[in-house]
Amino acid sequence: MSKRHSGFTLIELLVVIAIIAVLIGLILPAVQAAREAARRAQCTNNLKQLGLAIANYESANDCLPIAVVYAVNGVSGMPGAICTSPFGANCQNTPWFVLMLPYLEQAPLFNSFNASIGIEGPALIGYVINSTVMTSRIASFQCPSDNIQSFSFAALSKATGGSVPAYPWMTSKGNYGVNWGNLDFGQGVLSPVLTRNLFVQSPFGIATTGLSPITIRYASFTDGTSNTHVAAELLQGAADDLRGTIWDCHAGAGSYMTRFAPNGYQDLLPIWLSLSNPGALAGISGALALDNYDNIGTVGGPSRPGSSPPNPGSLCDSQPAQMLGCNDQANDSGSYAGTRSRHPGGVE
Image 1 (cartoon, helix red, strand yellow):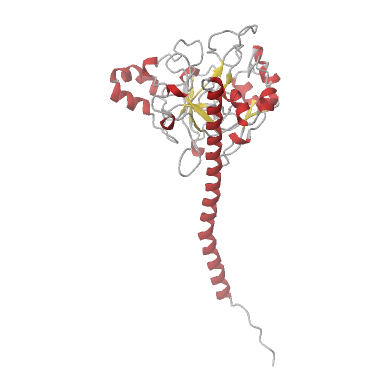
Image 2: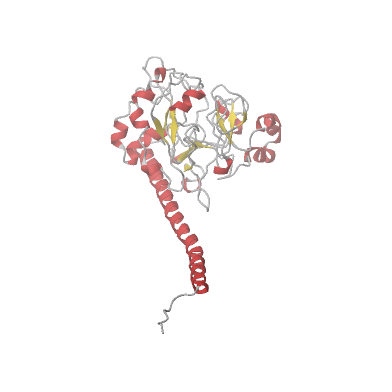
């Protein structure tokens, strides 16, 4: 008589598998939530470090970092006024972010930056001279909840019709920008439609003369520093999308506007104007046709809905499913973008 071996029956095995599957289903969301909490904590810490760096800059220089260095006196070929034509106007266009490097423990990187040329410079030579700096990825400017991207010079060259060479390197991106106010990149000074009387003062932007960036001190924050946001999160767009390119101060790259609520696409500007100045709303109604997404400036193209891949001349790769929907804005000064993040609980 043979000895019978004990073991699991098929039904018992299926029950065990089912129990394990249920346990995994219960544990996995908790693990994912814990990981996202850690990522969010890192993003929050990055913003705190940026806030401290801006405070240290203000203390040392008696003002916040200026939004953008347009030109340096005495440098041949660089006009003194704001450069309204990007990519080839012989302007520096060095953003606020570069000025912050020494205060973000990046003094060696800042010292290697050629400040007499800037990001662009005469004949766009800055893209070559300062390429080492622009291709460096700053860890404290990366939010781990987002996808790390770079900006392609090949895509920029295509958008500009070859005006910008298709350099083989790519510039790094980041996830933090500064508050550019409630209107658009032109802040009612350079905009062909919006006027300065509609502008609510922001920490960064353009002087009323249109000839220089504004200089702001914490003492001028009428609502106090605790009630004024200076910087917030942005998302990094695809390699052919300008958004997240921190070496540029334009909308969605190194700055954001408060026309959209965080992670939102409802334009708050017409709502505000309908309550405060209905006459002004009637005057700009034609400029609000494409205000359902970020408006990213084009290089000679018309205003139109964005696409993926981008339309000819566009620096906007519209991906609504990735929270990166956008439209092409023909007038660069009329561009605007909101603050965005991938945190379940909203933007930091």
